[in-house]
Each structure stands twice: as C-alpha cells, then as structure tokens.
Amino acid sequence: MTGQEGAPLRYGWTTGACATAATAAAHTALLTGEFPDPVEIVLPKGHRPAFALAREALGDDYATAGIVKDAGDDPDVTHGALVSATVRHGEPGSGVVFRAGPGVGTVTKPGLPLDVGESAINPVPRRLIREVVERTAAEHGGSGDVIVEVSVVDGEELARHTWNPRIGILGGLSILGTTGVVVPYSCSAWIDSIRRGVDVARAEGLPHVAGCTGSTSEKLVTDRYGLAPEALLDMGDFAGAVLKYLRRHPVPRLTIAGGIGKLAKLADGHMDLHSKRSQVNFGLLAGFVRDSGGSDALAHRVRNANTALEALTLCQESGIALGDLVATRAREVALTTLQGAPVEVEILVINRGGDLVGRAAFA
Image (cartoon, rainbow, N blue to C red):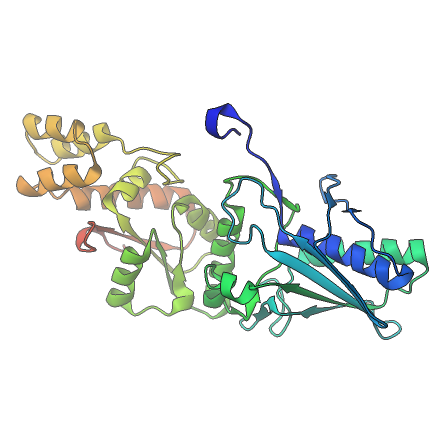
C-alpha cells in the first residue's frame, strides 16, 4: 500500500497495543521502581513494537505509564492520543482487574463483547494485558494480582466522533484492537463499529435497522420510520460490511439509504462505495435507460454524464425513473450478498437535497 509519490504507507498501533505496553511499563515500575523505556511487547501476529514512554509517575502503591498513540498514516480519530495505564496491587487471588479511567468508556447496553457495567477494554487487549502482567510478574517476583486502570486524555471528547455513544459505550473511548496493528485506510475500526451496532440492535430485539451513507440519508430514514438511534448503522461507504455481517447475524428488516452516486455503485456490485475504491458505471445507467424505453439519445447523454446526479436530472426531464431503477438493482445485489439470510431489504435513493428520488420496497 502506497501513499503520495509511491511512498509506502506507514502502519500504526491500536489503543489496545498502547494500553498493553503502558501496562507492561507501569507493572515493571511497580515491582522494581524503574520504568523500562522504550518498552517492548509481543502482538498476536508476532510483531514486537517498542514504545517510548510519554508519561511516568510512581507512588507508594501505584505506577502510571503513558504512551502517545501513533496510528501511522491512517486517518484515525485517536492518532496522537495519550493512552495511560495505572497499575496497583490487587487482592490476593484476584488476577487482573480492569477499570475504566478518565476517557475510557463503560458498557451500558447488551450485545457487545463485554458485559454491561464493564470498562470498554475489548477482549483481545484484555488478553494481551493479562499476558504482560503474567510475564512481568514472573520476571520480577510479582503475584500477578493487580488492578489495571486505563485512561485516555480527552477520550470522552474524542468518543463523540465515534460510534460509542450510539451503541451504549458512555464516558469515553473503547480500547480496541485484534492484532494490535493499524493498517492504513483499512477502516477496520469503522467496520468493527458496524458489527457492534448490529450486535446491539439484535440484543435489544430491534426488528429493523438502517445502513446509511451519511447524515442526510440518516435523517430521511429517521423521519420516515422513527427508528431508535441503536437501529441506525453508520454504514458510510461500507455496504459490504453491513450485508456480510447481517448474513451471519440477521435482523428481520434492513433499509439501505444513500445518494444516487453511491447506490449506483452498489447496483453495479461494489461493496465499498468510496470514490477512491469504486466508480459509477455510466454504461450500466445507460443500459437502465434503454431497458426502460428511453431513447438512444438519452442513453448516450447518460453514458457521457459527469456525475450520477447529472444522469438523474437528465432522466427526470425525460420521465425515466432512474432512481427506482438503481434502487431495484441495488436491492438485487444486496439480496444476493445476503445469500438467503432472513433479512428483508429496502433501498432508498436520495438526491443532494435529501429528497427521495428512488425506492425498491421491502418484499
């Protein structure tokens, strides 16, 4: 993967990896009085990153280490955040007890991989933290019974730019990561949020969810159906992530809503609707015009349109319901992707002003 002028994009590290390294440094300091700097950890796929410490504090019964998250070249909201771990001795036999410090959220709704009331430190980071506690305890004579409090400076504010409030993680960020590595532009955190959104909707027994490409289409769906916030999946460009997860974890009804440009891509079989990763197939749109009785001249103009919105306007002027045609084909693609999962699908197509210009209804 390359960036400008062919330079390779730089990988980064997850909040989970940072919290694990901070825990290793703090636990070592709690046992020895000295902070290892840099501190090295081992990640699930064998990576062995070393992290420089940005914060150190040592008291009679605690040690705190902080690491500035480096997301590499990924446009991650938590890039540059200070992730800290404070480690204290715990009760004998307690093992590792996790707590949410300032800036780390708490789970308030079922359906997530953590119980309600738990700190939002996800399962893989918990496992990695337990492993480094066990290792440092073995190296320095500790019991392994500790309280680990993870915090993120300004985490509550950063969380407002994530899905956390909608899926019931309140008070801050989640400590995430399954591999510990941030792959640039993989948008893995976004896709994971889609999955957690489906999980929460299922746990709450919601019969209808909506995958929307943006705030305008989300407003249309909200006004139309009055869906609960937990039913609104911030799909963005990741139609495939929504459909593939619902294939394995179905919800009875799915509305997909978005602009005609993005849904024309779905109608062409694209699962990622981002402009850098898929393009509108104007030949497909011209074929819709011909199949619906439009003139060859109109089909030619649609084929040579600059944008899907221009194609829509041309068709509206000629009485061709291009929005409906796009919606119908997009619904067929969605149902094919669902592979027979018990999910009814509706497609809503909007223009730039948020007006409904096409629909393929539930069966």
